[in-house]
Length: 459
Length: 101
Image (cartoon, each protein chain N blue to C red):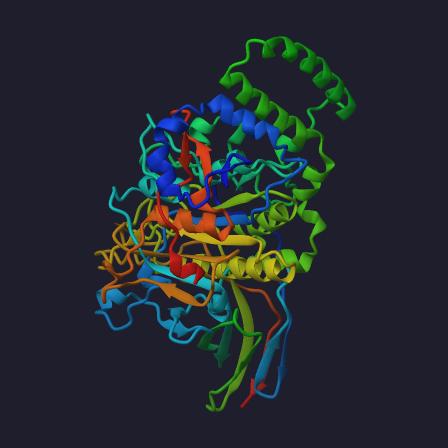
């Protein structure tokens, strides 16, 4: 069987994806996007939600240095090994930074990937595009966010959108607006839903879930019925763009009128002790919100740990004395403790609720940092080697994929590129990449990502 | 967007023998948490307090020891030319207990 959208399409027995593609470019080209959309429309997501797992991606904007976190080099010279010391974890032979003491006790659940690298520019945006979409791209060919692909192929469950980004989009990180957090050609119906509100604030509310003043829900409903009648006339001349507009309109309406959606976003339903355990800060409460959202049907949640690298404490440790003045002190007192506290709360909470097996947790960043500490005591951008990690879902924890050389400068073995991480996330979610396609920009079916998963993660 | 830190963190600490034990922190900001040990008013040890809820004094030097729990209070990331934070600092989040050795 081949899945296109949510619909299974029979294939001859024994036909692999590769042979299918070899055979099929010409044949499948005849299957246009409207046909695909029709196929999808035949499989109602509400009646028959696709059985895949969830994903929570934690994106560390600015990017921690591998030497100072999860790929320490204690035997390297001082100007390379840095200031922190490694500690033993609960997995024999695996050591991580001393400032992740809680994470060190749950490394049996985590798969570190230490040989990650990419070969394009060393800007934050290059890395964001790679890790959010599995591609680098320019403004002429914007690729969709992984969550938007999941939304397009598998649809939403219930009233909540399939793809949510917390607490808001990545903003200015220095080199343009292309951060990989849009639906691209998949259209507005699959754009991520941005919370655009800080869940750590005492007066936290989701602006998009508030019915405008002067409107009651029933009046809104009546207006929608009227609008539907008008829309019916338009459908005779329907185009792809109006379909997409409808989808996003319908999504907004469902959010506005759904009590279950409102409830999912209501953090005050959580016990104070649990909110404390995640950390009473924007990041911690966003991680807690992510758990609530997957519990309530959201398939893909991204938590941006910071939305910029300028003028605030974040992972971008240049120590430049100006607008990028993060140093070892920020890591030691703020960033590592904040991450350690929230991440371990999330994993423990998911596990206690039986959700960890159903949810891939991916901790991603844009690149590594320079092996040589710079003249001001910081480290600069370095895409040739870094460490990210996955756990939950189908991922086997307690292992390390790949390694770097003795200075943390290059992958030593099993080099991994960003699309393989994305492919592994899909596989961790239970998505069979050889048998699942999506509509591509040229209205022809394409593979979700042009890479194979890292087999070791699932062995 | 700067991170928001809600409420005021608070914990209680108790001494039993040479071991000091803390409760969970309420309104926990989730930032660096440390035991601070002073002898004669001078800091003699700062120890990460996240991983464990207790700390046992190993120092046998005679004197009066004072224990308190501190958490990092982030205002902003501004630093002076020496690289020290100018506003952000560790603040006390517990009562103090003393021990005579």
